[in-house]
Length: 235
Image (cartoon, rainbow, N blue to C red):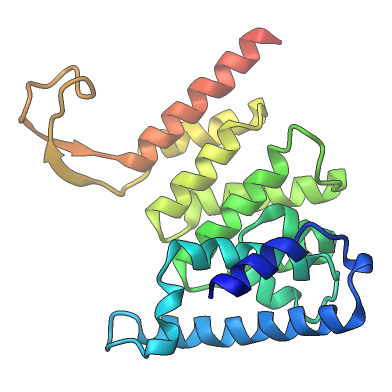
């Protein structure tokens, strides 16, 4: 495992065209092998004892190794591996090697996936694209509008409260005052809540330990509104 980690880290520093054909083929072959291992790992995790040959996937070194591997194969711009990268890699820079093709697939994940973790990953990548302050990701105005509309739809209607909250945080960072009415409605009406007890320093209007009801999505919308209004004052 450690040798693979070092190799993946080493090759990630090269441009794809600087690698030999033999190295390219081996890297892509290894990527497919690790994907198959990930599928088996995800299928067995929590259900039964993992096979010895998959235990390395439950380590911090594997996380770093797989990130370097994705970074390297992403430079190939081989669209045959793009669906796998969208599913298993949440590195925006890697995915944006494929430009609009990647964005279409990410938007489709957000719209169609039944897995809330995958939808959350899609939201985080889309937020990265819209919040790009270094102009690393070259996307058209039309594409930015499509992403913003997708995040609005997610903030309003996604079934998972944490996915809605993440989309809302992203919208709050855009500085678009047209989003204020939408966020106001969410801040007043999102239904997800849970019962807990007041915490010192957070629940200033309630005594420590007093039973209270929290609305985390409403709170995310309130915080997003605050950021939008602060930006509006500065302009």
